[in-house]
Image 1 (cartoon, one colour):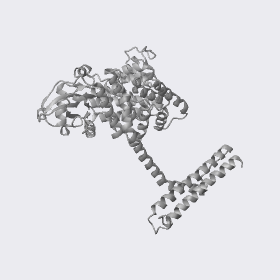
Image 2 (cartoon, helix red, strand yellow):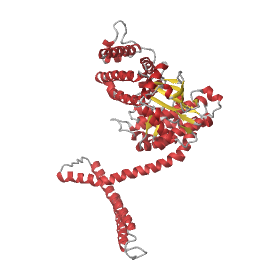
Image 3 (cartoon, rainbow, N blue to C red):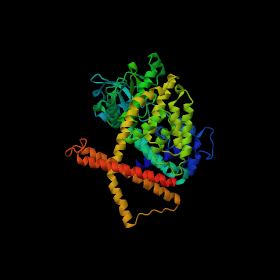
Image 4 (cartoon, rainbow, N blue to C red):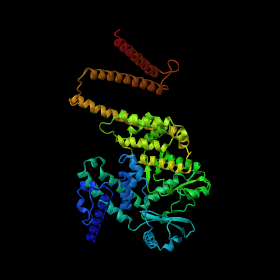
Length: 553
């Protein structure tokens, strides 16, 4: 069995190398020294050139290599820190083109996973699938209780194929890092490891069921969004059973037209749902393509397929709020500062050039009528600039950006005059700005509290270094010495300010202590207020003296 698996793996490596060469990527095969893996009977020239653009050839290569590589391309399509915009847009076209697996295999998987005969669980199950993808397929069924459901079943061979392909991908990634100097910058093995974790989550339907339950709880009382119920008793690692939604997929243009769906209302409900998921809950559906969005009666939006989700912690929510407010208000400075706050900037980062390019994008939009502003175009261009300057954007933020781009793209297909800015701006004004300000104040307060708590420890460390002579500062020019004096003066003023504040606060806290002496204030309060006044006068006096010295009086 082991020899057979090794043989299969060698044949797969041969197939991958052959496809790479045939699609014009022979130089990669040559660089990683895998030319020997090409079949001898094929006369393939390594230097062969293809007329198609490289991003198109990459997409065709991944499609030819099958489901694992298609998934890998889909992951790359949401990574602007790894691939340029033209590659992202091309890789977005990747779709799973997989023939349905025979129903006897589906029946075997259901019975194996649930530990029951299929008729002991379902009154009826359709043999023809509603949908089929690389990992699994979906069938409509009726439970014994009469409830209409959909059953998502993983293909028997899916996990084995994925694991084998990922092993090969990791091996090739290691060779690329070893032999291609330019590839090291992108850390191929790290990317493959991340992809492996992503795939592992998608292969575990229990995780998807948990995510679905969380989404249902988030929108339980909503009149605009409906999330289907999960039947926990029939969910395993490879089978998930959910409520059937009688609705029209957003991908069915003709069906939506016949049903006279108000597409503007649908877009409004869908976008507000995504914004609420991201900025209120910090947990969102990260794959809202038209097939995963169903339109129910009264323009209610239902999300399905929760295999890919994004998470926003408090800090990411705050920073993303700032960025999103900047985009909604087309405020270039706010966008720039937000982007630069997301990551450690690379060595030699040209801040001024970066600012000018972002300003170029926003100023062009300022010259356009608001109704003609395309949020997706702005987001795409800003992400492409970030890639160019190696500003790493968190994956969750990119997934959110892709969700907005996808929704606007869907809306424009149905209604060329749809204006996402009209939907975004009220949300920003009513919910986001107020929540952002409150959260930012709370976050800043907690950071300040942590700073004050750690200050004595850090001060002790500095004093210890000063005392032992291990703290050295070399001031070598007049300008640096002047700067040092300025810092010293500023520090003194901050100290005075803190003292004044402390005296006032302390005096106010003990206002009820002791008998009133003057104007209803006790002696201790008067002393503390007096010290505050004395400190204020001393501070003003020092500022006046400094100004006189500078004027030469």
